[in-house]
Image 1: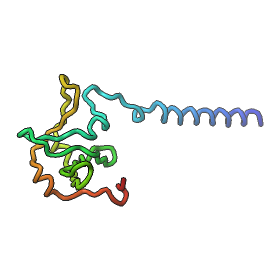
Image 2 (image 1 turned 180 degrees about the horizontal axis):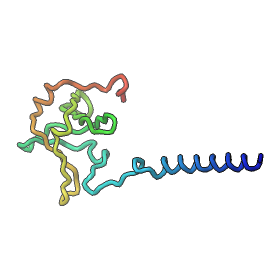
Image 3 (image 1 turned 90 degrees about the horizontal axis):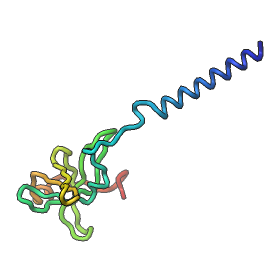
Image 4 (image 1 turned 45 degrees about the vertical axis):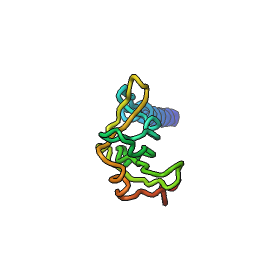
Length: 131
């Protein structure tokens, strides 16, 4: 009887471990497949942003993630060699991101002027976002 109980306990433990490994290791929400149309964050950091007049209005400096969604782009406006930069957060829908096949590079456009971005509410890298 004792051997039977030990065998049942061992089997139950083994099934529990196997079940946990399956849920964590191969569950449908663990792994995803990157699609050819997806963009990797490192491709966007440093991308210059132009407007409809093909004027340089800023540069993507960072991404704002909220839970599992892209909440905004941190855009740097003005400044020179990292001095005097003004950061603003713009909505993901405000930027159009393109990959130029012929040039093998990413580009971004936005319907705004440099002055509009400079007058937008400033984002500061401080507190929990301090670099």
